[in-house]
Length: 101
Length: 219
Image 1: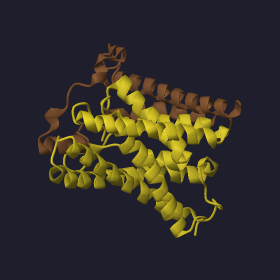
Image 2: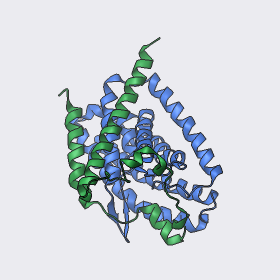
Image 3: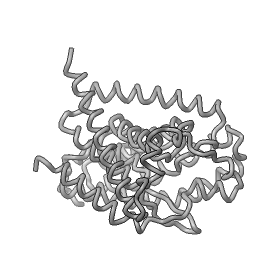
């Protein structure tokens, strides 16, 4: 099966869209400890909010989409494809470097 | 366990960034030297899977959630160096595009979940596997579960020390709570990692970085 990765990629995008509405909204381990120990207020707004990407993504939600699950699924799909392309590109670049003198 | 902006002092942010930069250069060099070309798609798919899984928090006890970190999974699939690179791609995209994990904490997050999760996790897995018998698939499964669980706890210990060195919290106040909650989150990490590796072991054992010599062995 030559295009196994394409099947895997589409499955990841679809599975993410299906599971996102079920994801727990509770704080993660570090945030929970920060709340319990009283240092959560030391968190400052993310510096990345100054970047142009913040005009497109508001955390894991695509801006301008009303339905929160759709906004999350679209942001998730975008992120999945960007990560996939970047990691593939990096592997391809390293391969090219290895094969060139 | 992504550290946000504001939790690290500038010396800790600077030192962890330098160390992470050195790690990335080393991983690039190692991967360039020895990496099977046919595994390039697997690098893309693994990174995409880990990014997706990190979006989906599962509940643990006491109003807390956790998600797959995936470092050990990346190491088992891609080997320690390409696995580290796949994780680095995930953290950079999360920090730059999705404001998840601070830019000042990017180095620390790469060290905690990339270096500890992938490199330390991978060598824990190798160690347990060779101790139990390299060619059994059950020893591979036990090693996968243990290494992924332990790597999450070790990552949480690293976070606790970085918070303490930054003066954000007292070590005595954060070390035990971090270990306690991540011992639970680590169970989720182990279950998910074993599920993915177990599935591949049955369907595509050739995709593992070092598959058992006899993948059909079930003793």
